[in-house]
Length: 544
Image (cartoon, rainbow, N blue to C red):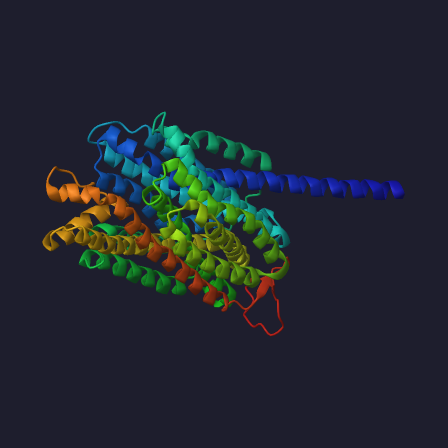
Protein backbone atom coordinates (compact mmCIF):
# COMPACT_ATOMS: atom_id res chain seq x y z
CA UNK A 1 0.00 0.00 0.00
CA UNK A 2 2.84 2.36 0.86
CA UNK A 3 4.43 1.73 -2.56
CA UNK A 4 1.16 2.59 -4.31
CA UNK A 5 0.83 5.78 -2.29
CA UNK A 6 4.42 6.76 -2.98
CA UNK A 7 3.94 6.17 -6.68
CA UNK A 8 0.75 8.22 -6.63
CA UNK A 9 2.49 11.00 -4.74
CA UNK A 10 5.40 10.96 -7.20
CA UNK A 11 3.02 11.07 -10.15
CA UNK A 12 1.17 14.02 -8.61
CA UNK A 13 4.43 15.85 -7.95
CA UNK A 14 5.57 15.16 -11.51
CA UNK A 15 2.27 16.48 -12.85
CA UNK A 16 2.57 19.65 -10.81
CA UNK A 17 6.15 20.15 -11.99
CA UNK A 18 5.09 19.52 -15.58
CA UNK A 19 2.25 22.03 -15.21
CA UNK A 20 4.60 24.63 -13.74
CA UNK A 21 7.07 23.99 -16.57
CA UNK A 22 4.36 24.52 -19.21
CA UNK A 23 3.20 27.69 -17.43
CA UNK A 24 6.75 29.05 -17.52
CA UNK A 25 7.12 28.20 -21.21
CA UNK A 26 3.75 29.76 -22.01
CA UNK A 27 4.65 32.95 -20.09
CA UNK A 28 8.03 33.17 -21.86
CA UNK A 29 6.38 32.63 -25.25
CA UNK A 30 3.84 35.39 -24.65
CA UNK A 31 6.52 37.81 -23.42
CA UNK A 32 8.49 37.33 -26.66
CA UNK A 33 5.34 37.65 -28.78
CA UNK A 34 4.21 40.83 -27.05
CA UNK A 35 7.80 42.08 -26.77
CA UNK A 36 7.84 42.82 -30.50
CA UNK A 37 4.79 45.05 -30.11
CA UNK A 38 6.18 46.97 -27.13
CA UNK A 39 9.67 47.44 -28.57
CA UNK A 40 8.25 48.64 -31.88
CA UNK A 41 6.47 51.52 -30.13
CA UNK A 42 9.80 53.15 -29.17
CA UNK A 43 12.54 51.65 -31.34
CA UNK A 44 11.30 53.14 -34.63
CA UNK A 45 11.37 56.72 -33.31
CA UNK A 46 15.17 56.52 -32.96
CA UNK A 47 15.52 55.55 -36.64
CA UNK A 48 13.19 58.31 -37.89
CA UNK A 49 15.93 60.78 -39.00
CA UNK A 50 17.74 58.04 -40.94
CA UNK A 51 14.49 56.93 -42.60
CA UNK A 52 13.73 60.51 -43.69
CA UNK A 53 17.28 61.04 -45.01
CA UNK A 54 17.52 57.82 -47.04
CA UNK A 55 14.00 57.64 -48.48
CA UNK A 56 13.51 61.38 -48.92
CA UNK A 57 10.27 61.43 -46.95
CA UNK A 58 8.86 64.68 -45.67
CA UNK A 59 8.71 64.88 -41.89
CA UNK A 60 4.91 65.13 -42.07
CA UNK A 61 4.94 62.05 -44.29
CA UNK A 62 6.85 60.18 -41.61
CA UNK A 63 4.22 61.32 -39.11
CA UNK A 64 1.58 59.62 -41.29
CA UNK A 65 3.68 56.45 -41.21
CA UNK A 66 3.74 56.53 -37.40
CA UNK A 67 0.03 57.32 -37.16
CA UNK A 68 -0.87 54.42 -39.48
CA UNK A 69 0.46 51.94 -36.92
CA UNK A 70 -1.26 53.61 -33.97
CA UNK A 71 -4.58 53.97 -35.79
CA UNK A 72 -4.68 50.31 -36.84
CA UNK A 73 -3.71 49.23 -33.33
CA UNK A 74 -6.41 51.31 -31.63
CA UNK A 75 -9.09 50.42 -34.16
CA UNK A 76 -8.58 46.64 -34.08
CA UNK A 77 -7.98 45.86 -30.40
CA UNK A 78 -11.60 45.01 -29.58
CA UNK A 79 -11.87 42.87 -32.73
CA UNK A 80 -8.61 41.10 -31.86
CA UNK A 81 -9.90 40.19 -28.41
CA UNK A 82 -13.14 38.80 -29.79
CA UNK A 83 -11.38 36.82 -32.52
CA UNK A 84 -9.16 35.27 -29.86
CA UNK A 85 -12.22 34.01 -27.98
CA UNK A 86 -14.01 32.72 -31.08
CA UNK A 87 -11.06 31.18 -32.96
CA UNK A 88 -8.73 30.29 -30.08
CA UNK A 89 -6.16 32.24 -28.08
CA UNK A 90 -3.11 30.25 -29.16
CA UNK A 91 -4.18 30.33 -32.81
CA UNK A 92 -4.57 34.12 -32.76
CA UNK A 93 -1.18 34.64 -31.09
CA UNK A 94 0.43 32.61 -33.87
CA UNK A 95 -1.57 34.37 -36.60
CA UNK A 96 -0.90 37.83 -35.17
CA UNK A 97 2.81 37.10 -34.76
CA UNK A 98 3.06 35.99 -38.41
CA UNK A 99 1.18 39.08 -39.65
CA UNK A 100 3.41 41.32 -37.53
CA UNK A 101 6.73 39.77 -38.52
CA UNK A 102 5.92 39.59 -42.26
CA UNK A 103 4.86 43.24 -42.13
CA UNK A 104 8.10 44.07 -40.31
CA UNK A 105 10.19 42.42 -43.02
CA UNK A 106 8.28 44.34 -45.70
CA UNK A 107 8.73 47.63 -43.80
CA UNK A 108 12.47 46.99 -43.68
CA UNK A 109 12.50 46.17 -47.39
CA UNK A 110 10.83 49.38 -48.58
CA UNK A 111 12.18 50.51 -51.97
CA UNK A 112 13.43 54.04 -52.53
CA UNK A 113 11.41 56.40 -54.70
CA UNK A 114 7.96 57.96 -54.82
CA UNK A 115 6.30 54.72 -53.70
CA UNK A 116 8.26 54.55 -50.42
CA UNK A 117 5.83 56.52 -48.25
CA UNK A 118 2.74 54.59 -49.42
CA UNK A 119 4.62 51.30 -48.92
CA UNK A 120 5.53 52.19 -45.32
CA UNK A 121 2.03 53.47 -44.49
CA UNK A 122 0.39 50.24 -45.71
CA UNK A 123 2.73 47.83 -43.96
CA UNK A 124 2.97 49.85 -40.76
CA UNK A 125 -0.84 49.63 -40.69
CA UNK A 126 -0.72 45.84 -41.13
CA UNK A 127 1.87 45.74 -38.34
CA UNK A 128 -0.72 47.48 -36.16
CA UNK A 129 -3.33 44.89 -37.11
CA UNK A 130 -0.92 42.10 -36.18
CA UNK A 131 -0.21 43.77 -32.84
CA UNK A 132 -3.93 44.09 -32.15
CA UNK A 133 -4.34 40.36 -32.78
CA UNK A 134 -1.36 39.35 -30.63
CA UNK A 135 -1.78 41.33 -27.44
CA UNK A 136 -5.33 40.40 -26.29
CA UNK A 137 -4.77 36.77 -27.21
CA UNK A 138 -1.37 36.63 -25.46
CA UNK A 139 -2.76 38.11 -22.26
CA UNK A 140 -5.67 35.67 -22.43
CA UNK A 141 -3.22 32.75 -22.77
CA UNK A 142 -1.40 33.83 -19.60
CA UNK A 143 -4.71 34.21 -17.76
CA UNK A 144 -5.87 30.82 -19.00
CA UNK A 145 -2.82 28.80 -17.93
CA UNK A 146 -2.26 30.46 -14.52
CA UNK A 147 -4.65 29.83 -11.59
CA UNK A 148 -6.49 32.85 -10.19
CA UNK A 149 -4.51 32.73 -6.94
CA UNK A 150 -1.19 33.15 -8.79
CA UNK A 151 -2.43 35.35 -11.61
CA UNK A 152 -1.42 38.66 -10.04
CA UNK A 153 2.24 37.73 -9.75
CA UNK A 154 2.32 36.11 -13.22
CA UNK A 155 0.79 39.12 -14.96
CA UNK A 156 2.97 41.48 -12.92
CA UNK A 157 6.03 39.66 -14.26
CA UNK A 158 4.49 39.76 -17.75
CA UNK A 159 4.02 43.55 -17.65
CA UNK A 160 7.42 44.17 -16.05
CA UNK A 161 9.23 42.29 -18.81
CA UNK A 162 7.12 43.97 -21.51
CA UNK A 163 7.74 47.39 -19.94
CA UNK A 164 11.47 46.73 -19.75
CA UNK A 165 11.49 45.93 -23.46
CA UNK A 166 9.73 49.24 -24.14
CA UNK A 167 12.41 51.13 -22.23
CA UNK A 168 15.22 49.23 -23.98
CA UNK A 169 13.78 50.06 -27.41
CA UNK A 170 15.65 53.38 -27.83
CA UNK A 171 18.94 51.82 -26.70
CA UNK A 172 18.66 48.89 -29.12
CA UNK A 173 17.36 51.20 -31.85
CA UNK A 174 20.38 53.49 -31.59
CA UNK A 175 22.76 50.55 -31.91
CA UNK A 176 20.91 49.02 -34.88
CA UNK A 177 20.50 52.34 -36.68
CA UNK A 178 24.29 52.82 -36.66
CA UNK A 179 24.34 49.76 -38.97
CA UNK A 180 21.13 50.37 -40.96
CA UNK A 181 17.74 51.75 -39.98
CA UNK A 182 16.09 48.77 -41.70
CA UNK A 183 17.40 46.55 -38.90
CA UNK A 184 14.91 48.10 -36.43
CA UNK A 185 12.23 46.23 -38.37
CA UNK A 186 14.23 43.08 -39.12
CA UNK A 187 15.06 42.55 -35.44
CA UNK A 188 11.49 41.30 -35.05
CA UNK A 189 12.28 38.16 -37.09
CA UNK A 190 14.46 36.32 -34.51
CA UNK A 191 12.13 37.46 -31.71
CA UNK A 192 9.14 36.01 -33.57
CA UNK A 193 10.98 32.73 -34.23
CA UNK A 194 11.74 32.33 -30.51
CA UNK A 195 8.11 33.09 -29.64
CA UNK A 196 6.75 30.52 -32.11
CA UNK A 197 9.18 27.82 -30.94
CA UNK A 198 8.22 28.40 -27.29
CA UNK A 199 4.52 28.29 -28.20
CA UNK A 200 5.04 24.88 -29.81
CA UNK A 201 7.00 23.58 -26.79
CA UNK A 202 4.46 24.87 -24.26
CA UNK A 203 1.58 22.91 -25.85
CA UNK A 204 -0.88 25.65 -24.95
CA UNK A 205 -4.52 24.48 -25.06
CA UNK A 206 -6.59 26.28 -27.67
CA UNK A 207 -10.13 26.46 -26.30
CA UNK A 208 -12.61 28.11 -28.65
CA UNK A 209 -16.08 29.55 -28.26
CA UNK A 210 -18.30 28.56 -31.23
CA UNK A 211 -20.11 31.88 -31.56
CA UNK A 212 -20.96 34.17 -34.45
CA UNK A 213 -18.54 37.03 -35.07
CA UNK A 214 -20.30 40.38 -34.90
CA UNK A 215 -19.07 41.92 -38.16
CA UNK A 216 -21.28 45.02 -37.94
CA UNK A 217 -20.05 45.73 -34.41
CA UNK A 218 -16.44 45.25 -35.53
CA UNK A 219 -16.87 47.78 -38.34
CA UNK A 220 -18.54 50.32 -36.03
CA UNK A 221 -15.95 50.12 -33.25
CA UNK A 222 -13.04 50.20 -35.71
CA UNK A 223 -14.50 53.24 -37.49
CA UNK A 224 -15.29 55.05 -34.25
CA UNK A 225 -11.89 54.39 -32.70
CA UNK A 226 -9.98 55.24 -35.88
CA UNK A 227 -11.89 58.48 -36.49
CA UNK A 228 -11.62 59.79 -32.93
CA UNK A 229 -7.96 58.78 -32.49
CA UNK A 230 -7.14 60.33 -35.87
CA UNK A 231 -8.70 63.61 -34.75
CA UNK A 232 -6.72 63.51 -31.51
CA UNK A 233 -3.47 62.79 -33.37
CA UNK A 234 -4.06 65.54 -35.93
CA UNK A 235 -4.78 68.12 -33.24
CA UNK A 236 -1.04 68.86 -33.09
CA UNK A 237 -1.14 69.79 -36.81
CA UNK A 238 -4.64 71.19 -37.24
CA UNK A 239 -4.94 72.71 -33.77
CA UNK A 240 -7.70 72.24 -31.21
CA UNK A 241 -9.61 75.20 -32.63
CA UNK A 242 -9.88 73.57 -36.07
CA UNK A 243 -13.37 72.36 -37.10
CA UNK A 244 -11.71 69.33 -38.73
CA UNK A 245 -10.23 68.23 -35.40
CA UNK A 246 -13.54 68.37 -33.60
CA UNK A 247 -15.43 66.85 -36.55
CA UNK A 248 -13.21 63.78 -36.34
CA UNK A 249 -13.26 63.51 -32.53
CA UNK A 250 -16.99 64.12 -32.09
CA UNK A 251 -17.85 62.06 -35.17
CA UNK A 252 -15.82 59.16 -33.80
CA UNK A 253 -17.49 59.42 -30.39
CA UNK A 254 -20.92 59.41 -32.03
CA UNK A 255 -20.03 56.26 -33.97
CA UNK A 256 -18.84 54.65 -30.72
CA UNK A 257 -22.14 55.62 -29.06
CA UNK A 258 -23.97 53.98 -31.96
CA UNK A 259 -21.76 50.92 -31.48
CA UNK A 260 -22.73 50.70 -27.78
CA UNK A 261 -26.43 50.97 -28.65
CA UNK A 262 -26.10 48.28 -31.29
CA UNK A 263 -24.17 45.94 -29.00
CA UNK A 264 -26.85 46.15 -26.30
CA UNK A 265 -29.49 45.01 -28.80
CA UNK A 266 -27.70 42.16 -30.58
CA UNK A 267 -27.76 38.55 -29.36
CA UNK A 268 -24.06 37.79 -29.89
CA UNK A 269 -22.26 41.15 -29.56
CA UNK A 270 -18.62 41.85 -30.28
CA UNK A 271 -18.30 43.19 -26.72
CA UNK A 272 -20.61 42.12 -23.89
CA UNK A 273 -21.18 45.54 -22.37
CA UNK A 274 -23.03 44.05 -19.42
CA UNK A 275 -19.60 43.43 -17.88
CA UNK A 276 -19.74 47.12 -16.89
CA UNK A 277 -22.60 46.25 -14.52
CA UNK A 278 -19.86 44.92 -12.26
CA UNK A 279 -18.82 48.01 -10.29
CA UNK A 280 -15.35 46.59 -9.72
CA UNK A 281 -14.76 46.14 -13.46
CA UNK A 282 -15.93 49.69 -14.14
CA UNK A 283 -13.60 51.01 -11.42
CA UNK A 284 -10.68 48.99 -12.86
CA UNK A 285 -11.35 50.41 -16.33
CA UNK A 286 -11.53 54.01 -15.09
CA UNK A 287 -8.30 53.58 -13.12
CA UNK A 288 -6.59 52.22 -16.24
CA UNK A 289 -7.91 55.12 -18.32
CA UNK A 290 -6.62 57.89 -16.05
CA UNK A 291 -3.35 56.06 -15.35
CA UNK A 292 -2.60 55.59 -19.04
CA UNK A 293 -3.10 59.31 -19.63
CA UNK A 294 0.30 59.58 -17.93
CA UNK A 295 2.02 56.21 -18.48
CA UNK A 296 2.31 56.25 -22.28
CA UNK A 297 3.08 60.00 -22.68
CA UNK A 298 5.76 60.01 -19.96
CA UNK A 299 8.02 57.86 -22.18
CA UNK A 300 7.97 60.53 -24.89
CA UNK A 301 8.00 63.70 -22.80
CA UNK A 302 10.73 62.54 -20.42
CA UNK A 303 12.93 61.51 -23.35
CA UNK A 304 12.46 64.81 -25.20
CA UNK A 305 13.03 66.81 -21.97
CA UNK A 306 16.29 64.95 -21.36
CA UNK A 307 17.56 65.61 -24.89
CA UNK A 308 16.63 69.31 -24.91
CA UNK A 309 16.80 70.66 -21.36
CA UNK A 310 19.49 68.27 -20.09
CA UNK A 311 21.38 68.18 -23.44
CA UNK A 312 21.43 64.36 -23.32
CA UNK A 313 22.16 62.07 -26.25
CA UNK A 314 19.41 59.63 -27.31
CA UNK A 315 21.15 56.84 -25.37
CA UNK A 316 21.47 59.02 -22.27
CA UNK A 317 17.81 59.97 -22.62
CA UNK A 318 16.89 56.28 -22.68
CA UNK A 319 18.84 55.78 -19.46
CA UNK A 320 16.99 58.75 -17.93
CA UNK A 321 13.67 57.03 -18.71
CA UNK A 322 15.02 53.83 -17.14
CA UNK A 323 14.84 55.54 -13.71
CA UNK A 324 11.07 55.43 -14.12
CA UNK A 325 11.10 51.77 -15.22
CA UNK A 326 13.40 50.79 -12.36
CA UNK A 327 10.71 51.83 -9.90
CA UNK A 328 8.05 50.21 -12.07
CA UNK A 329 9.82 46.87 -12.20
CA UNK A 330 10.61 46.74 -8.49
CA UNK A 331 7.04 47.45 -7.38
CA UNK A 332 5.06 45.47 -9.96
CA UNK A 333 5.80 42.09 -8.37
CA UNK A 334 4.86 43.47 -4.97
CA UNK A 335 1.58 44.72 -6.42
CA UNK A 336 0.89 41.28 -7.86
CA UNK A 337 1.34 39.64 -4.44
CA UNK A 338 -0.99 42.16 -2.78
CA UNK A 339 -3.58 41.48 -5.48
CA UNK A 340 -3.42 37.71 -4.96
CA UNK A 341 -3.84 38.03 -1.18
CA UNK A 342 -6.06 41.06 -0.65
CA UNK A 343 -7.60 42.04 -3.99
CA UNK A 344 -7.04 44.98 -6.31
CA UNK A 345 -8.32 47.93 -4.27
CA UNK A 346 -5.46 48.19 -1.70
CA UNK A 347 -2.68 48.10 -4.28
CA UNK A 348 -4.49 50.45 -6.66
CA UNK A 349 -5.10 53.01 -3.89
CA UNK A 350 -1.48 52.88 -2.76
CA UNK A 351 -0.15 52.92 -6.31
CA UNK A 352 -2.19 55.89 -7.55
CA UNK A 353 -1.30 57.88 -4.43
CA UNK A 354 2.44 57.17 -4.83
CA UNK A 355 2.37 57.89 -8.57
CA UNK A 356 0.49 61.16 -8.01
CA UNK A 357 3.09 62.26 -5.45
CA UNK A 358 5.97 61.03 -7.63
CA UNK A 359 4.86 62.94 -10.72
CA UNK A 360 4.24 66.11 -8.68
CA UNK A 361 7.70 65.97 -7.07
CA UNK A 362 9.32 65.08 -10.39
CA UNK A 363 7.65 68.12 -11.97
CA UNK A 364 8.91 70.32 -9.13
CA UNK A 365 12.51 69.24 -9.80
CA UNK A 366 12.48 69.56 -13.62
CA UNK A 367 13.80 73.13 -13.54
CA UNK A 368 16.89 72.04 -11.59
CA UNK A 369 18.19 70.64 -14.91
CA UNK A 370 19.85 67.77 -13.06
CA UNK A 371 19.04 64.09 -13.60
CA UNK A 372 20.83 63.36 -10.31
CA UNK A 373 18.27 65.44 -8.38
CA UNK A 374 15.30 63.93 -10.22
CA UNK A 375 15.89 60.18 -10.22
CA UNK A 376 14.29 59.45 -6.79
CA UNK A 377 11.03 61.06 -7.89
CA UNK A 378 11.09 59.36 -11.29
CA UNK A 379 11.51 56.04 -9.46
CA UNK A 380 8.65 56.93 -7.10
CA UNK A 381 6.32 57.72 -10.01
CA UNK A 382 7.32 54.44 -11.69
CA UNK A 383 6.81 52.49 -8.47
CA UNK A 384 3.30 53.86 -8.16
CA UNK A 385 2.53 52.85 -11.73
CA UNK A 386 3.89 49.37 -11.10
CA UNK A 387 1.44 48.95 -8.23
CA UNK A 388 -1.49 50.08 -10.39
CA UNK A 389 -1.35 48.77 -13.94
CA UNK A 390 -0.94 45.03 -13.51
CA UNK A 391 -3.47 44.65 -10.63
CA UNK A 392 -6.07 46.79 -12.41
CA UNK A 393 -5.67 44.84 -15.66
CA UNK A 394 -5.63 41.46 -13.89
CA UNK A 395 -8.68 42.20 -11.75
CA UNK A 396 -10.60 43.36 -14.83
CA UNK A 397 -9.74 40.20 -16.77
CA UNK A 398 -10.63 38.00 -13.78
CA UNK A 399 -14.17 39.40 -13.98
CA UNK A 400 -14.67 38.34 -17.59
CA UNK A 401 -18.20 37.23 -18.40
CA UNK A 402 -18.33 33.50 -19.16
CA UNK A 403 -14.50 33.36 -19.15
CA UNK A 404 -14.22 35.48 -22.34
CA UNK A 405 -10.75 36.63 -21.39
CA UNK A 406 -9.75 37.77 -24.87
CA UNK A 407 -12.85 39.94 -25.18
CA UNK A 408 -12.33 41.69 -21.83
CA UNK A 409 -8.63 42.13 -22.60
CA UNK A 410 -9.69 43.79 -25.86
CA UNK A 411 -11.84 46.23 -23.85
CA UNK A 412 -9.11 47.12 -21.36
CA UNK A 413 -6.40 47.47 -24.01
CA UNK A 414 -8.66 49.65 -26.16
CA UNK A 415 -9.21 51.91 -23.15
CA UNK A 416 -5.47 51.98 -22.41
CA UNK A 417 -4.47 52.92 -25.96
CA UNK A 418 -7.25 55.47 -26.35
CA UNK A 419 -6.17 57.14 -23.12
CA UNK A 420 -2.54 57.10 -24.26
CA UNK A 421 -3.43 58.80 -27.56
CA UNK A 422 -5.54 61.38 -25.72
CA UNK A 423 -2.75 62.07 -23.22
CA UNK A 424 -0.18 62.53 -25.99
CA UNK A 425 -2.42 65.02 -27.81
CA UNK A 426 -3.55 67.02 -24.77
CA UNK A 427 -0.14 67.22 -23.10
CA UNK A 428 1.55 67.90 -26.46
CA UNK A 429 -0.76 70.85 -27.06
CA UNK A 430 -0.14 72.09 -23.52
CA UNK A 431 3.63 71.78 -23.97
CA UNK A 432 3.58 73.73 -27.24
CA UNK A 433 1.34 76.47 -25.81
CA UNK A 434 3.35 77.01 -22.61
CA UNK A 435 6.72 76.77 -24.39
CA UNK A 436 5.57 79.40 -26.87
CA UNK A 437 4.55 81.73 -24.05
CA UNK A 438 7.81 81.27 -22.15
CA UNK A 439 9.95 81.73 -25.27
CA UNK A 440 8.00 84.89 -26.14
CA UNK A 441 8.91 86.33 -22.74
CA UNK A 442 12.59 85.43 -23.31
CA UNK A 443 12.69 87.03 -26.76
CA UNK A 444 10.96 90.18 -25.49
CA UNK A 445 13.49 90.48 -22.68
CA UNK A 446 16.33 90.19 -25.22
CA UNK A 447 14.95 93.05 -27.30
CA UNK A 448 13.14 91.40 -30.21
CA UNK A 449 10.49 93.77 -31.66
CA UNK A 450 7.07 92.97 -30.26
CA UNK A 451 5.56 92.55 -33.73
CA UNK A 452 7.91 89.63 -34.40
CA UNK A 453 7.82 87.97 -30.99
CA UNK A 454 4.74 85.77 -31.35
CA UNK A 455 5.64 84.16 -34.69
CA UNK A 456 9.28 83.78 -33.70
CA UNK A 457 8.37 82.18 -30.38
CA UNK A 458 5.96 79.77 -32.05
CA UNK A 459 8.61 78.78 -34.61
CA UNK A 460 11.23 78.12 -31.93
CA UNK A 461 8.78 76.18 -29.75
CA UNK A 462 7.73 73.85 -32.53
CA UNK A 463 11.31 73.42 -33.76
CA UNK A 464 12.43 72.50 -30.24
CA UNK A 465 9.52 70.13 -29.57
CA UNK A 466 9.94 68.46 -32.95
CA UNK A 467 6.86 69.50 -34.88
CA UNK A 468 6.94 67.69 -38.24
CA UNK A 469 7.20 70.65 -40.62
CA UNK A 470 9.27 73.21 -38.69
CA UNK A 471 13.02 73.68 -38.43
CA UNK A 472 15.44 75.57 -36.21
CA UNK A 473 15.61 79.23 -37.34
CA UNK A 474 18.17 79.83 -40.10
CA UNK A 475 19.59 82.90 -41.79
CA UNK A 476 22.10 85.66 -41.07
CA UNK A 477 19.75 88.52 -40.22
CA UNK A 478 19.55 90.06 -36.74
CA UNK A 479 16.25 88.37 -35.93
CA UNK A 480 17.46 84.88 -36.85
CA UNK A 481 20.73 85.45 -35.00
CA UNK A 482 18.91 86.62 -31.88
CA UNK A 483 16.63 83.58 -31.99
CA UNK A 484 19.57 81.17 -32.28
CA UNK A 485 21.43 82.92 -29.47
CA UNK A 486 18.35 82.55 -27.28
CA UNK A 487 18.21 78.76 -27.55
CA UNK A 488 20.22 78.28 -24.36
CA UNK A 489 17.56 80.20 -22.42
CA UNK A 490 14.94 78.16 -24.25
CA UNK A 491 16.24 75.04 -22.47
CA UNK A 492 14.94 76.48 -19.20
CA UNK A 493 11.73 77.67 -20.88
CA UNK A 494 11.17 74.14 -22.12
CA UNK A 495 11.81 72.70 -18.65
CA UNK A 496 9.24 75.11 -17.17
CA UNK A 497 6.72 74.09 -19.84
CA UNK A 498 7.34 70.42 -19.02
CA UNK A 499 6.48 71.18 -15.41
CA UNK A 500 2.92 71.86 -16.54
CA UNK A 501 2.84 68.53 -18.39
CA UNK A 502 4.12 66.52 -15.42
CA UNK A 503 1.79 68.32 -13.01
CA UNK A 504 -0.99 67.37 -15.44
CA UNK A 505 0.10 63.74 -15.16
CA UNK A 506 -0.06 64.06 -11.37
CA UNK A 507 -3.64 65.35 -11.70
CA UNK A 508 -4.52 62.36 -13.89
CA UNK A 509 -3.21 60.01 -11.20
CA UNK A 510 -5.17 61.94 -8.58
CA UNK A 511 -8.34 61.28 -10.60
CA UNK A 512 -7.32 57.62 -10.83
CA UNK A 513 -7.05 57.55 -7.02
CA UNK A 514 -10.62 58.85 -6.74
CA UNK A 515 -11.76 56.08 -9.10
CA UNK A 516 -10.20 53.45 -6.82
CA UNK A 517 -12.72 54.52 -4.16
CA UNK A 518 -15.48 53.22 -6.44
CA UNK A 519 -14.07 49.69 -6.23
CA UNK A 520 -16.14 47.60 -3.80
CA UNK A 521 -13.11 45.67 -2.53
CA UNK A 522 -14.23 42.28 -3.81
CA UNK A 523 -11.83 39.83 -5.38
CA UNK A 524 -12.27 36.81 -7.65
CA UNK A 525 -11.44 33.37 -6.27
CA UNK A 526 -10.54 30.14 -8.04
CA UNK A 527 -14.19 29.23 -8.03
CA UNK A 528 -14.92 32.24 -10.21
CA UNK A 529 -16.94 34.13 -7.58
CA UNK A 530 -16.23 37.58 -6.28
CA UNK A 531 -15.74 37.45 -2.52
CA UNK A 532 -15.85 40.56 -0.32
CA UNK A 533 -12.68 41.86 1.23
CA UNK A 534 -14.97 43.52 3.73
CA UNK A 535 -18.42 42.32 4.68
CA UNK A 536 -19.95 45.70 4.04
CA UNK A 537 -18.87 45.77 0.37
CA UNK A 538 -21.68 45.39 -2.11
CA UNK A 539 -21.56 44.63 -5.79
CA UNK A 540 -23.08 42.24 -8.30
CA UNK A 541 -20.80 39.19 -8.68
CA UNK A 542 -19.62 38.69 -12.25
CA UNK A 543 -21.09 35.69 -14.03
CA UNK A 544 -18.49 33.13 -15.04
